[in-house]
Image (cartoon, rainbow, N blue to C red; front, side):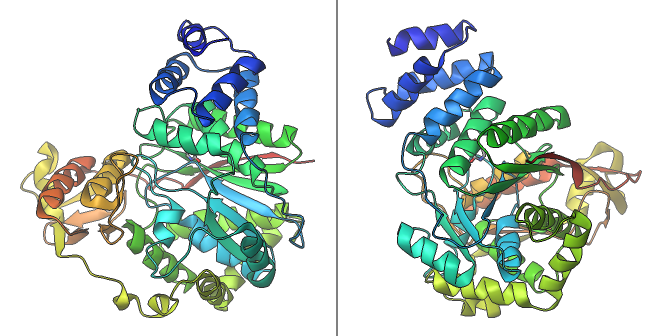
Length: 449
Ligand code: URA
């Protein structure tokens, strides 16, 4: 077997067998296959696709590329959650404390930002002192003591995914159903939970832009998990505009705190409620989703979930006083307010008018604007600026008027701010006619024993 032949085989649209896929995954993980050959292989997969059997074989080869986490030392049924990636998606920071405050252990491995999307680990590193890398023993102890731990993917958990994920990020090979399914499910299977709730994003800010592709991705992942003995639910949620009001690492931590204190933006809270309720069902805490919703609301209203967030942050070395007093977080050098008038004047239909409606958003461009501000990585080793980002006052379907503050961009570099502002302004379309607000939850797919 040699790598060149396998790249050509996939480039020509042929099917790879299990041994061939293992050869590629093992070779790339141990360094005998270089980045340039793996990049070519990934691009071939991007254009030619993989069938269900190839996708499962790729997932298993990646899950077996390192250790599998043994969570048997944690009491109770362990439920994991994972998002396929979006803009302003801070749901793990909200759902984790809710579940833990209700007595469901959450042992979560999370990722960093990928392309235009953010990552939970980057966000948590915005809290001074927070350790995203702790030993397996400390991780398990924390879940037993506190009910929640969130760490970065350890070096030996699905190391193949770690390397391939970083390479895909810089070779335009992220948005492919098989590659995303294998990436997410290899980590989730290696991370050892009994059940998994997936948040499959759909729309302009997601890797899957259409509902049809998002459903295919959700079905592929549920099938892989189910065949490996896991209870699976995938909730398909909207990503045609940022989720919530904030995009950017520290800004999203601050927004998560607002949500846990009961002041969350409605669409963001709807997604969190749905994910948390499904996790409660899979954990066996309740029999039906309808009996789960009141528990979720109660966790927030009583302040239990917010207290759990602080306990979790403290346990992982973070300074929880920043959550109680968000003014302690470092401020950026520049704050650029965007007014409704700037957007109205950019669209032919509303030029010169005093009011209009926000009717569409190229959400990937909003993610790119945040990345350009310094909140994401352009190369795989780039150091990011955790304090920059965007705060939105308006959402799709809202009316905007000329003098109203539509958003604020936070930056530490004037040139980056200019570039990001340009992308941000062009992302929105404004019209004189109103549109209906879109639902944030589209569908739910379940595969359970
Ligand atoms: N999240 C992942 O973990 N992997 C992907 O490929 C995309 C999103």
